[in-house]
Length: 81
Image 1 (cartoon, rainbow, N blue to C red):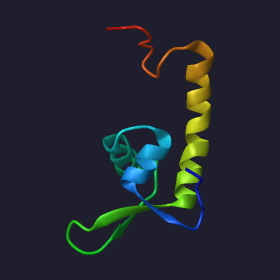
Image 2 (tube, one colour; image 1 turned 120 degrees about the horizontal axis):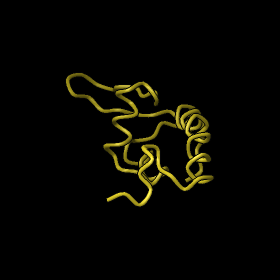
Image 3 (cartoon, one colour; image 1 turned 135 degrees about the vertical axis):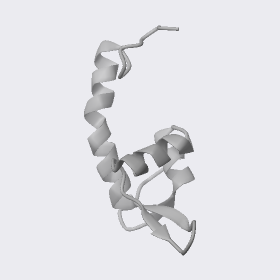
Image 4 (cartoon, rainbow, N blue to C red; image 1 turned 90 degrees about the vertical axis):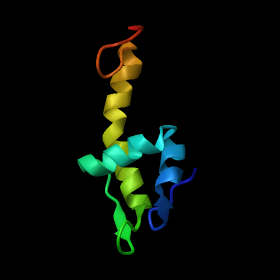
């Protein structure tokens, strides 16, 4: 997916872009790692701006590079079962 900074994306689109689950994106939003806008009243709906997607990707780049370099996941659980 080509990310446009001025466009707003659904949570499912962002999850697809990063190839992670929707739950992972919701956790990133809840923890403040990924900015989102709530539209509507009550439960409403969440949208993520393209600028937020790009910023999140930059913030995640050092962590993913470290995993790729040593082959160990964030918890040091490579091959652990």
